[in-house]
Length: 297
Ligand SMILES: [Zn+2]
Image (cartoon, rainbow, N blue to C red; front, side, top):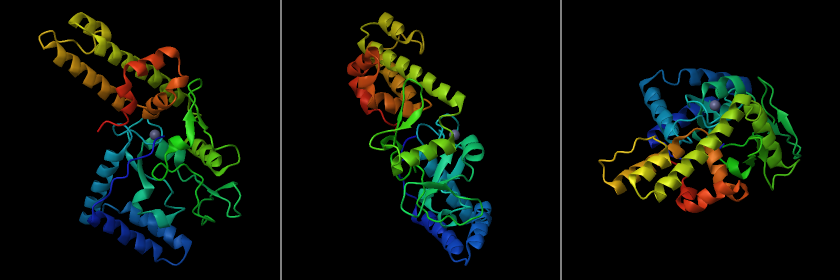
């Protein structure tokens, strides 16, 4: 998981959200707040103003997505649903809060995350408690790596042997950070969906191949070497001036890297490059510009 950019909404849309949130907050009991949150959410695009506001919200979230419209949780599937990081039924006070939204895929939103969330025990310990459905949570201090508030890469590492995520130092067992990672991985099942783990592994091999092609293209001195570098894909246009053709291929490879699924794998390759096999370390030495490739724009 990666931290999302934090783009702003227009004042009109922000106001639209605040008005709806005030309506919920004005209800007396938790159950009324929760019920009202559901009703207002379901009818959010029922008016012309609501439709316009949520069109802007969706488009802004698309622009903030990691990669190109990739689910911000699994990084594998299309980001289609506006997801409440703090579920609206349990945290109605965050239903129309801009910072509580991200785009997730259908599967992450409806099969994995649902309304599951843990909060830290109000006793001040690092124990986390699963919030029960229909009950007011004892606190809003969620035990979840919130990708709009924090950088998930500060909390976890991808292990390149098993392609699983683990809490990273200084988040040792029994610290808040460790518990947040544990609960996040557990709820989103990022480590126990075998196909997802395999996709991360193949993303790693694809990134490696594309980086090698980039280096070899960069070193090519003639059309034959260009062709060898990319093994026929894309096709080399021998009618085009050599330097321009080379640049076109380099640009294409950079774009391919930055639009590939599992951008966290790429970011971890950069971060952990000195511990990766020698040939990969050499590729990064030969293409130091790749170290700055974090996002497509
Ligand atoms: Zn997903």
